[in-house]
Image 1: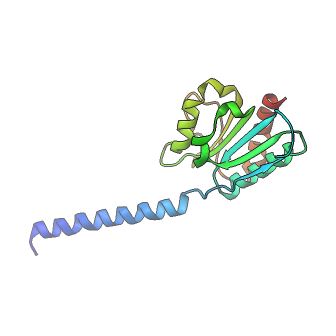
Image 2: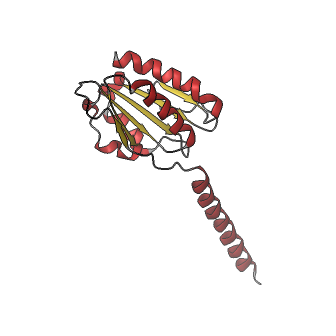
Length: 169
């Protein structure tokens, strides 16, 4: 076998391994689509609250704790997947909570676009960002950051509720 042929085989093997690693990484660490639902949809109120999240045990738990906290109040709560942020008008909500994972060293595109087009309403937005080390966040965004660990659910939820209470009251 010639030297050029060996180099080609080695390069193809490396490319193949990188491709397999990329597929495995995406499968292992990508977020599920979050379930869309509404709470207090029949309430005649001007108080509206959006939760845009991704599907994972950690994020689902935080979402459920926050919904349970606010559902007894006269607040319409709309829970969506972050992929639906492109159709959301920030003027339709008194408060917005965005829960996302930092993926491939950046926020999901839908979150980044929404934050950029909603800068005039940043006082209504609370962001929870999770990442491997727990400190990544978008610049110019006052985000609650942390790792997706079970022991972080209650502390992160409490921080978010405190911020949301200030906005919704």
